[in-house]
Amino acid sequence: MSATDVMTPSKLKPMPLSQPVELSPKPSLIGLTREEMGAVLKEKGVADKQIKMRVSQLWNWIYVRGVSDFDAMVNVSKDMREMLKTHFTIARPEIVEEQVSNDGTRKWLLRFPPRGAGRPVEIEAVYIPEEGRGTLCISSQVGCSLTCSFCHTGTQRLVRNLTAEEILSQLLLARDRLGDFPDREAPQGTIMPAEGRKVSNIVMMGMGEPLYNFDSVKTALLIASDGDGLSLSKRRITLSTSGVVPEIYRTGEEIGVMLAISLHAVRDDLRDMLVPINKKYPLKELMDACRAYPGLSNARRITFEYVMLKGVNDSLEDAKGLIQLLKGVPAKINLIPFNPWPGTNYQCSDWEHIEKFADFINSAGYASPIRTPRGRDILAACGQLKSESERMRKTERLAFEAMMIANHGED
Ligand code: SAH
Ligand code: SF4
Image (cartoon, rainbow, N blue to C red; front, side, top):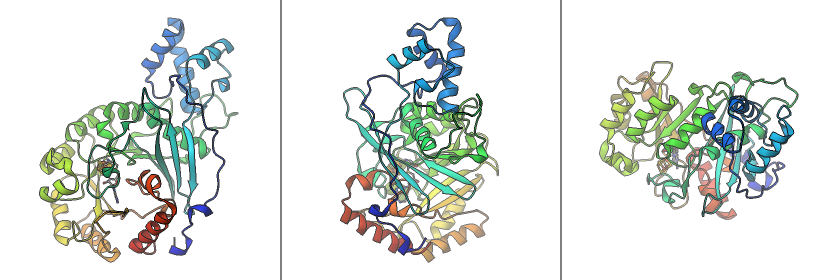
């Protein structure tokens, strides 16, 4: 994409949005485990001997067919549908805004109803189509309690954890909008084959630290990978963490998805500054947890994310240290050009320098793709979600885009 291709927000292709949903006090059936779903049905009077069958039916309608309305469940009796409508919902969150970048990246600003006495919250999800696959970047929290110094989310306080329903809703909604569920007419039980799907992969790389919201993230990801439902292979789900060591062990044992570590520095003194959770779980403990991650092999590697900060962590000494640190770990290195935000003191390393850094790593035998900035015109970088659009007025936005183009040059 050339700089001149970048579209201003006003030129973005408009998309018809879903109707604002009434803030419903009804509990959602989305995000419940099968056991939980069975329990709430039982509470509403469904007979014991019917529960398993009803849960299977609902599971299929919600996760295989992607319906968001009980009336679409044609093989469920009218009485049962009325009961479900009275007590529960399977509605999607409200789409506040949907943007489509000229490189095909899509970004949704979603609003979730309040929980308890709280207020409605908004988060963003981003879809990035690539050759042969499409990746959805989803959020686990609104804000973040950690304070990584180069991350804009880190400057915002944690508002709240997302529920399992809200985490999964991002996937359901993206698949709705991309036409990624089977047609209404498709035979019962039809599952879109993984190869043909628009959303073939998900990454937990949006807002928040997923391992500080472990239970909801676990429930959501186990439902996303359930073979009788959304059926997304665990190898196509990547969870990114700043390094919450005890929960990395739990992730390996209890969830089993692919792991990405926000490394960003190879010395404790520097990592303490960039990723302050390092003070609690220093590099040695982090790397021990990585080495112990179950199922690692050359075909199943941990991704190490490394943001390129000019003059901070981008020397060839750092590159050497990186190779040293990762010795013996099946690893992929993902170099991320720093995505600047208003008020930050960091700058992105120069493009030629990033390439030199990458060459050094490649020559040591590691693939080190540089993450190409995508969806720049809609501010869609992972790790930067929501924060900009929330705070920037249009003039600031344009200045920001210009800064990003200057930093990244031509793709
Ligand atoms: N909290 C989790 C996941 C969300 S952040 C984590 O830290 O891993 C997703 C990725 O974007 C992380 O690697 C994060 O370090 C990176 N990131 C955050 N801010 C960034 C920025 N301004 N530029 C480039 N990458 C950034
Ligand atoms: Fe939170 Fe991740 Fe940002 Fe750190 S990089 S502040 S953990 S979202």
